[in-house]
Image (cartoon, rainbow, N blue to C red; front, side, top):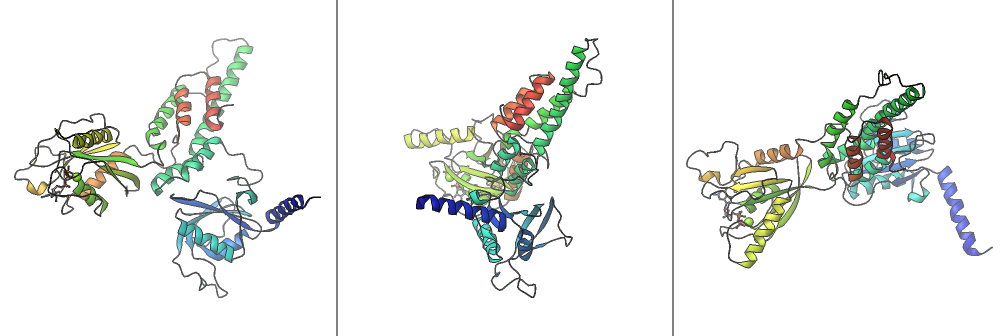
Length: 429
Ligand SMILES: Nc1nc2c(ncn2[C@@H]2O[C@H](COP(=O)(O)OP(=O)(O)OP(=O)(O)O)[C@@H](O)[C@H]2O)c(=O)[nH]1
Ligand SMILES: [Mg+2]
């Protein structure tokens, strides 16, 4: 027997030993920026290890399938206090007990929180392993649990890339089965209806086969339409909303971006034409990831570099989710080049007003002092998240899911509906 073969067998044997006898932990979610990370702990000492480092808000003992919020403080010493090594402030986390030997820790997605929890687990005797040594399939709760649907796998992937808690909550609802349960419920109804129809046909159709059929097609189509209304948000939960500041030169676009961000990202001067190219900055407003874009002032220009900056500004505005159309009391409005894009009219330099503005729904700001910025921020959040799905709503997270939902609207035939719902749940057969 070659030594290479031996060493492979040793590795395989040690893996077997590790999986059956040891308590192990692994990071399920990808590295990099994300709102939430999930760490798995599996093995006979999982409860003991987790409970040495975690104090739940509720003192009731955790049972399988329960979820607890609480503090991750790190290993306790013999007197029951956090040990001297646990000098870092405690972390608010969520622990899920899938079954006695399988626990999940949901924590902040930053590497500091993840590294700290993994190190604490190592300190209480739990071994870090990579995915190949993990004894359970990803998210399979128990040996007898149902295989997860493609919908849940897709949601899990999206969840790992969400950057704010608000967007992660929508993805998490789908991981917990909001869309899966909705599709399964209607699949049941469609299947039953298809069987009833087939039975009626073989017994000789007396024209009453639809009586008592539980499939209410109008109901289904109404629900599909309501779900599709969230597609615009759902398919780009992991990408920030694009908010573009647009207006004539010198109206205070760059000053406003700086006021929103709270630091000087963009150069603002008294000289018109200061911003010549497109400039981006990412921020979070009311839990929504936002990419703000500063642009060159729009006006008739004979200079070629300036003209290029202006055409880039107009392109950005026409591809935005929301345009902040900036005006001042002393500059005339520009013709709106982005009429399809939702906009908020902002009257900056409102300190220069000598008479009340003609339009009352303009948001008045003074970028140089920060006045009106809070109102502008809440208006931005309202406009972007007006159609944000309420908790636990089914939400499509990619084009595949949207296509399946749209196909449901094209038919009322139970067998075709059932086939499309199966495809939504598990992909093409
Ligand atoms: N009085 C007053 N001055 C302001 C206000 N906001 C900005 N300014 C001043 O207006 C001038 C132009 O501001 P910018 O932010 O550079 O304007 P801009 O729209 O980015 O200009 P361009 O990049 O040239 O298109 C600067 O001197 C700012 O200090 C405001 O609310 N009130
Ligand atoms: Mg500027």
